[in-house]
Image (cartoon, rainbow, N blue to C red; front, side, top):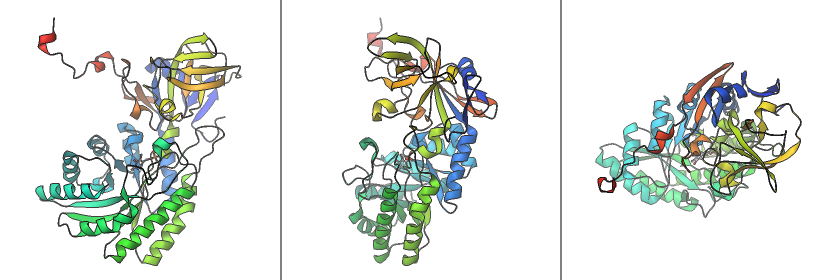
Length: 427
Ligand SMILES: *Cc1c(COP(=O)(O)O)cnc(C)c1O
């Protein structure tokens, strides 16, 4: 019914996620609500394991910071790509071993370096300037840092410009031609041990060729590093594999990615006589399609178009507003009814741009209907905000016919948290 999304089915006119009726979930836990299929998370990470049996997979925690999801991924042998001290803590709590964590970031504070060194994780250094400050923090702590270097490979990708990260003009990484030199500098620093190269060219990439191009570029840089006496033990090619959000935009699978890049990686390693560990950092392609977001219809307004106003807006699901993203939507309580009318599904936020889905053919809608947005497991809850006085929603994990709360919804007191009024202003 829903293409390759075998965890989603329609029967008795309702949408099911695994063996659980999504309409029951909306009743039991309230809306808005994020619902994740445990089986689908495992299936997706296993697809990576079988396509890349020798590579480490570092899940990009920014895509989904739910601790339960991270625990499941840890059980499946996944590492973590973290971009902040907060994400590092999540990975640690989920039981991801420190040997499989890479601390990334283009703007790390001294405190970030200290926390990463104390946690004993590898650090991806994004600039020469960062190298200097990391080196002094490490010597101060009487320790040393294993570092990777983030390369700006100058590879362009067809994706939303806000999420293309490997362009020459992007803020990320060290220009490829400066990397060997920076590596050399690092080798001479007593508190730094350079162990490899890192890149990440962007997100929601639906074409394999830019990955192949980036790997080739990485191998060129590895060659330069070797020639100047450096050792390359790790090659991390980042994440970015896209998923199929819309029925007419199919996406490559991990196996396709493997087919596109492993021959290049292997041949070039063989030529150079090195056997580095290959690392991938998938985020979206592991979690996006595992999750639906349920939201209730508050108002159906017949104006210049038909508006279905629901209780989730860009405060809950930011992607349509941020990137003009398409998310498939169905009426969860009318899942087998024929599509009759076009609706624009909008949220409760006081902004005209608060549109989740435009001009979608749906069954006739009314107040109280439950809408399900697909593919919301990546950059969904993790980007949710409290804008416009909206507490953040709950998250639920479904396993077979069981549903368990993994994050309770915030109540309105969350909006007051940490605030204080100077005494002189109190009446
Ligand atoms: C965001 C990010 C990823 C994950 O990207 P996806 O498109 O979600 O796979 C991986 N590595 C780095 C450094 C990132 O910033």
